[in-house]
Image (cartoon, rainbow, N blue to C red):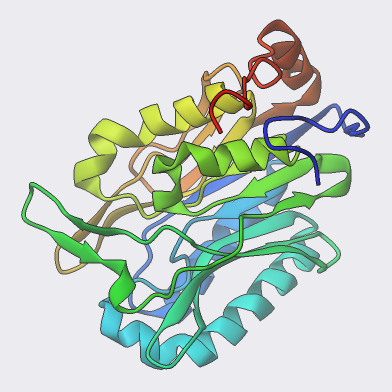
Length: 287
């Protein structure tokens, strides 16, 4: 494994350019409705030429935390099967950005899976940073009431001709050390599927994603939830694709749909040559 903050010198990306799509959904308490909506947008992304497609956190189910526990065993199996089927059917590399998977008694993992176009599991990640906050708008979120934090560092998957893809989930975006780890393991593209709240999203969503792209000179693909899901649960929207310079290439706005843009590996290498900040880190000083 490479030292954190370095990029393996032997790594070469085969495809110079391809399209990545960040899906934007308004998921509900009804999994059937959610799966149908997700497939519709995966189909659209594939027809527009996307090779990499990301679904947001909670793509299959978004409701009160208590319902998550009872549904988790069946829903986890169904989500894994759905991702495999969709990747094969539409011939895309597909990220399922977060679904409940059984953990210890009374808890689930918030799990993301990256599936290759042939149906191969490329990476699996259980969210390590849980969203336990009291917001000024009066809403309280306590993800840890039902979710068990993962204990493994997030993976960087070798996606063959699409390069190396680093995986994270939502609240992780506030922890830059996680993305340094992904960059140190050679990530070219950082996936950040999310259910960002409307209140925090308006001030923090885009600027945090741009910072992660700039700091790590990597593309960021951020699928998102949008709109009102149930009761007072409302998401910010604005699924984004951002380039290594921090430029927003595509923004899905506030409606369901896609943010789709080109991943250009020649541009990636040019930015890393012009701004070699990862190579300039003084790791020995800050240990």
